[in-house]
Length: 574
Image (cartoon, rainbow, N blue to C red; front, side, top):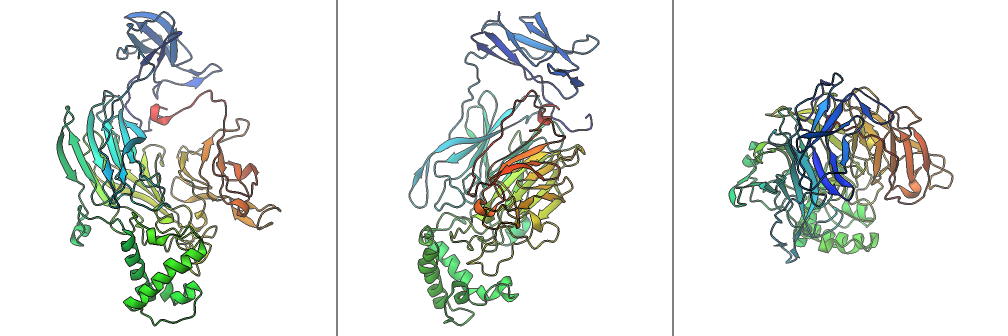
């Protein structure tokens, strides 16, 4: 336990006025618990003080209700070891009058898209981290515009911002992600953690040219604005922080024309894996010579957008396709938590490669450029059981990838990379890219298994955390621990065959069944008639299904409930 790199947090005592008195709650630190009993953890007791006088000794909790407490009372808590020796008392606190702390936020200014659509802002995701080493958390708030969109939805979005606040509402800095990071639920996951063990949190997330750090003084005035540093190879290639890669509808049309003009050069065409002509791909008689002229490429683009796509689905409105970013550099940037200072920027791995053509975004009846290619996930895991690593992932429907990094205070070091490889298609404009192995011999089985987030847990009891990547689990060393499959039931679309459990939106990892050894995973699945289960409970170590039910439809949401007596959280000391 002592070898694990933890946060250096203080007692975290808080007090709140209630109808029954003053409620107190505080942290249990990592070295203070030695066991447990029917009433709670054992190993450390706590003396509670009101206005300098001891009012109680708590033996089985980190909560206490002072029925005689007043709004003017001041409280302190001190740990007491087995020998009765008391540690230093916590900082003195007064009760919150309303039962909570209200932190004032500074909403970004409203905006207007290139299409003339107005938007405003609301606070979205939040994270916490101690950025200055004082043992108290600061707060990181992600601002989403009102026109934030799912990756499958067309249209421009406003910019995304991330703010850092103290508990009293001082805005330390704001990071403007710029126009080249689209706003929506799947694009930006901010990691706030003390990665290098210096007692101060860093922040990492996906960036792009145009990402800018804005610093403020205590009066809320801007003191500086600075773009991130583009890698040398990108500067030499002519990229700059003033670039805007957002596609207009006309820009997307030109993009398709360019893709068609270069069809004969595509690797999959050259290898003979895809049709040699676009006419064959679209089910037409051959009428053009390759390489295509500009006029012929435009003619095929018109047919593809106005006829072929519409016949596939009336939801395909590619003439209105705009606001997406399908080219330009992508990065991971590490920021100093206290100041927002850029510490390092590296290329995001893997890069998008294309607008989703290879990822299967054109293959289904619903043509969705920029969808499967732009599904991002991120998290923190103790892969070696001692130090935290940053995990960044891309894709989970078809090609599925993941990279683990260690931050030593100066450089990001890649620990391992997971990449399923492409899911093979015979025709990128009409195929089923889901549920088939990727081309990589080691990782090909994890395609179609991801969820809208991944969880982290030590599923095999070796003291090192794994990545529960939906219906697959990646071991701490980057190998595939398992990729869960099962027999399709008689009422399914393919009875008697073996199929992946597949993608789903929600999953939960815990000791759900206390009568079984180890942890379990509960997950819902979206495969409908092509998935063996609509929901499943499986063994977290082996991936074997313990319990589940076939639904035959997209089971989009679900959760598991249980009576929780104790939650042990490394982040808070254990």
